[in-house]
Picture: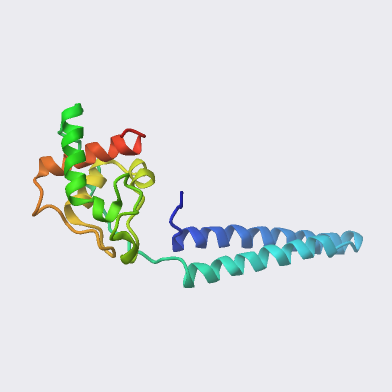
Length: 177
C-alpha cells in the first residue's frame, strides 16, 4: 500500500529534522564548552541538518503539488440521506462499476486501466475515504477535484446516486466487498 507524499508533509519532516539538528548543534557546543567533547554531537547535528535539507529539496522538487480544494462548511457536515441497507450499497456498487472503475479500479485502489495515464494518479479510496467526512466525499464526487482528472458527476448522476456511491465507498473502505 502506498501513501501519497505531499509538499506539506515533506516540509513538516524537514522542520522536524532541522529542529533535531539544532538540538544536537546546541549539545555539541555545550559539550565543547564544558568538556571539550564535541565530535559525536556535531556529527549528529550534521547528519540531521543534511537530512532536513534533503527533505526540503524533495518537498520543492519531487513531491506533487496538488492544489487543495476547500470544501464548503455546509458540505462537510452533510448527512447521508440514503438508508444503510444492502440494496443501497449494491446500487452504489453498480454505479461505481459503471462510472469509477476505469480510474479507481474494482477495489478502489487507484489502479484502474486508465489510472496509469493520469497525472496525478487516482487516489487509493480504501485509504482516502476513512480520512474524510461523508459530506466531503459527496462534494468531491459532485464537484470533481481541482488539479486532478476527477470529473464533476453532478450533471450525470442524481444526488441519490452520488450518495449511494458514498455509501458503497464507506463499506469498501471498511473492508466490505
